[in-house]
Every structure is written in structure tokens, then in C-alpha cells.
Length: 157
Image (tube, rainbow, N blue to C red; front, side, top):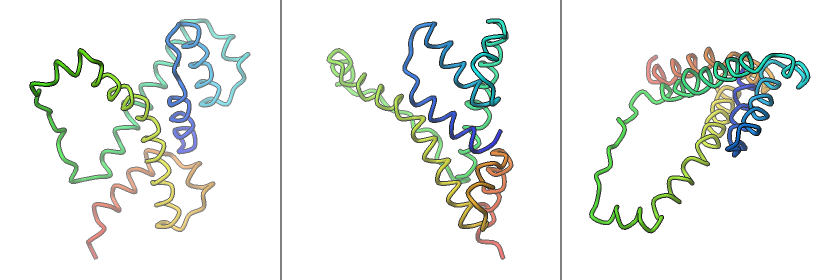
């Protein structure tokens, strides 16, 4: 998967707000068109089961394989912090205060992913003396492996 396609995927995911089946199919068709470089007509030629299986595979690769790879860029990352419940949490939930905060986090996760891609691209352009077009066309997994290695060995001579 190229850096360019992963970045485009994060843009599409950020814009996705459809909750019904029809918009989900349109959204998945847009993702397949972008990933495979095919027309909507070609996507619609496939039966529904093939479309769903393909979309599920794309989402799995993007969300469960590539996105966690960004965590490896921080070798000293802290473990996830567990939040303790306070006496006011029930009150906040009843009055909708926590829901707005959670919704804001959900809406911004793909923007954060895209921003991280942009940072890695800038790092590779400057640190590896490569061009934007070469970095965007490179395999994202190989690039992230290389960046993680460079970060881990930055203090070695």
C-alpha cells in the first residue's frame, strides 16, 4: 500500500458520516475506486458479497495493520492510561457532557492519522533527501519500518 493511498484513505474516513446502508455502499465504492484505480462502473460489476469482502479487507489492512504501525515510531510510548471514574461522571453522562467530548475524539481520529502521515512524509523528504513524489509512491509499511529504525538508532554512531 502506498503512502499516497493510505493518506487518501484517511481523508475519506474523516469525511465518512453515513449511517445508512446506501451511504455505506457508496463510501466503500469510493474507497475501492481510490485503492484499485478503477471506475465506479467496475466496482458495481462485482456482486454485493464481493464488494463487502473487498471493503472489509481494505479496512482491515488500513486500520489493523498500517495504522498501528505508527505506534512503533515512538519506542518509549507510554501504556494506555486507565481513567478512574469520578463522583461527577454519572452526572456528566446524564447531562450529555461526556458524549460531546467522545464524539469530538471520534471525528478527529482520521485527521490525526493524516497529520501523522504528513509528518512522516516531511521527515522522509528532509531526513532521507527524497522527493515528495517518491515518498508518496513508496510502500508505507517499508517506509514506517525504515523511519522506526532510524528513530531507534538515532543516538548510535
